[in-house]
Structures are given as C-alpha cells and as structure tokens.
Image 1 (spheres, rainbow, N blue to C red):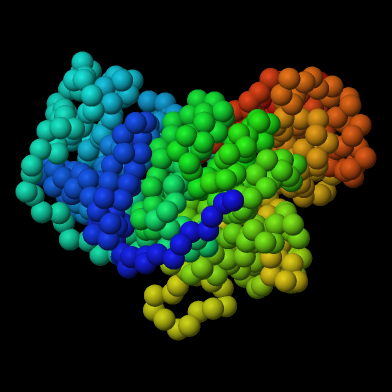
Image 2 (cartoon, helix red, strand yellow; image 1 turned 120 degrees about the horizontal axis):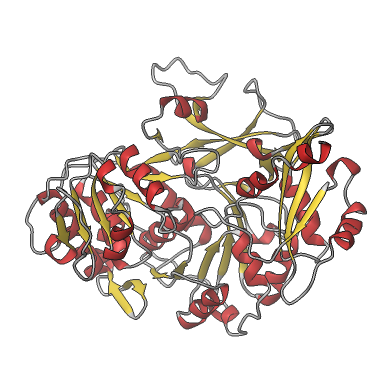
Length: 539
C-alpha cells in the first residue's frame, strides 16, 4: 500500500541555495542526491555547493554574472547550479541535447562568463568558442581536455573546489538566480529570467500540493534546463527529500529506476507517459510510487487510463505550467475521475485568470487567455524588452494608482473555466489551426485520435491550403508491435470529428516522433515538412 508522507517541518528559505543549507542543518546525514551508485548527504551537498560558490568568486565571477552548465544530469550539475546561486551569480542550464551553434547562441546572448562542461562536450564547441566574446573561463570535469580554447583558461573541477576562502556576493530574494532558455520552436530561444523568490516560492507551492516530505524519493527524468525538471530538485530540497538523477535512453530505463530506487514521485511530459503506458509495469512499483504528475501538455485520456490501471494505488496529478511562471495549476487526484481533461485550479500562492482581448474576465466556458499573477511570475526575457512587454504586462482594469504596477504573465495559451472554476486547456495561440473559418485546437484532434487506440503517437497541425486557409495534417506512429492503415484511422475519426476538423493528410511513420529539447513532440518541426504540400498539389 502506498504510504502518505508523514508531517515534517519545512524550512523558511528565501534564497535558492538555502533550500540545501537549511535541509543540511535539520538532517545533515539525510540522503539528498543520487547519481548512478553515488549518493550525497545534505551535509556533503551543502559543503560542495559552498566550495563551488567560493571557487567561482575567486575566479573573478562578479555578482549577477552568468555561469553556464553544459552537462548531462550528474551531481556536479546540481552543485554548480546551486553553487552559482550561492555565489551571487546566475546559472544558465543548457540542455545537453543542444548542438554547438545553439549553445554558442545562448553563451553570447546572456554574456556567459564561466562555462562548466565535459572534455567531450567542449570538443564539440571548439569551432564556436571564438564567437563567445564574454567567456572568460572554462571549468572541465574528468580527464584533461585536448581542445584548443585560445585565450580562454581551462580549470579543473577539483582545482575550482580546492579550498578557496572567497566570500560570496550578497544576494536578496529579488536578485536573479537563473536564466532558463525556451526551446526556440518559434525562432531563437528566449531566456526566461527567474529570481530566487520565484524559484523558492515555486518549490514551496509545489511541495505543498504534492505533499512532499523527507520520506520522498523523486526521480529527475526531465532535463534540468526545463522548469519542470529543475523543480524536482527545488521541491525535494525544500522538503528534505532525496532526488535520483536519471539520463535515460529508453522508457524502460525509467521503469527500472523507479523500481530500483523505490521512487515515490515521478513527474514527466505526455510523450514519455505515452511510451510508458505501453510497457508492462512491475507490480511492486505501485507499492511505493505515491504519485505521478503530468506537465508540458495535456495527457491523452487513453494514456491516463492505462497508467491508472497499471498503478491503481498511485495518485495522478494533472498539472499545467509555463517557464515564465514556473508552475500555474494542478488538478487534485480526487477530481480526476470527474474531470480527467481538466488542468485544475491555481496552485497555492498564485491566481489564474481567463481574460478576453480587452482584459475583461471571460464568462464560464468562454475561451480566453490564461493569465498568471503572483510570486512565481518571472522577471522577463533576458535582453529582449520587446518580447518581455508582449508577455509580461499589468492587468487591464486593475491599476491601483501605484507608480509601479503589478506585472502578470500573459501565457498565450487559450483555456476555458467551467462553472465550478476548473480550467481546461484548449491550445496555444500560435499553434491553433485556422481552417474553413474555424479555429481548431490540435490537442482536441490528437485526443480523438488517441481514443481510437489505433496509434502510438500523434501530432496534429495546420499547413497552408489555397482554399481552406490551413488544412489539418496528422503525423502518426503505429502502436507497439502493430501496423496502422491510414484509411482505417480516417474512417474512425470521421465518426468522431466534424468535417472541418478532419485531416486532409495522414502520414504514418515509425516512432518515436521528434521531440524538442524539453521532451515535447515538436509540432512545428513536423509542420515544416509539409509547408508546400498543397501548393504542389494545386500546381
């Protein structure tokens, strides 16, 4: 039987790194972080964080300067992130899947001063390092790299942590702590700036509704460059729990880690859950897995049903978040049977509004833009005043006469709120399909396709069409160990969708479908393959 967490005293941290320091003061020998066969206690993790902070200050990193981390998930990745914050600097976690030009763009965009990476990754950057004019130091792990770095000094991890007494710069909770870069599916990636207050408030809020405590073990399967991935660290450290770092190759690796480490909490995105739902879950997992939480898009109802059947004693949490505000809503497990398509209500210490174009509140079940206000609202986009002013704005009609108005995040996502106040995701404004005079949500189409149980994965999107404006295209994969006839699938969805929502093209290909760096199916990349499909057909 899955046990509930016992009551535990949470800390009153205001700075990000204090989450670790305070946990070490409460329970120094409590396990904090596991990577492969190595586990660090909170005391050991706290000392490593302090040593990194002193080391980077001694290397000349000034208050507020950026430290980039280009590594897979490992103990040093975590130490560096929290150590940068402890130093009074700003950490920039780079997704390990990024290519050299993408890494170089981010290093230039936020004027990174110090880069932490491995010799292997450094070698891939050799041709682009010269373009990163603000980079002053490179810290490496493992064997000494042979890469030529020009005038940029190389420092080993061991040397950086070797006994510096340099004092960290003073920080307060409104100072920058991190810059998280979005995937850049609509152009160059944007750097979302988060303060210590944003990240600590997020940790406290999420840990509250997930009921995290020191008895928990959380699996960090998502990239730490993704807000939901990094949240596994902050919520666990706030509660004094243990985090297991996992760099998985196959979905089955996730199941193995859940079983081996007796994980109590798993957070993942729908594409991973879709794959996991097709596997046979070891029976013992449900004895210790207290919850599974979904973020990064709506989980198909078919997938949710399969997971709940495999995990009958595990609580499902359906969540919604955006990097600009870390986390926004969740659906309590007891509501899942009544409203499985809902993203719930606002998380603790946040207010979620559904607004019309003029800023007025939408009526029940009227589609509008999701707007988030509260302590989790980020500081804006790094070095991009135009995009910041589009997304971070004062609430219309709520001006109080203050010289400095409150700023909310306008998500760009279309949702509706029912009569009881529960929210339902409709789609991203920039992904809505405009066809035959209608605005169609790709997630609504995908949900219907999944309900046929004929596909493994599906992506729906619109492409230019001379008569319709946009035509609906589906890219699908067959279920595991099965075949898929597009004519049979079309016949099925024809019974479930109105004519204007029917796909004009179904493309069947082997899986999995391409992901963006945060693990979500990349609709825009797929859509790019079909941009001229109907133009060519017309000619």
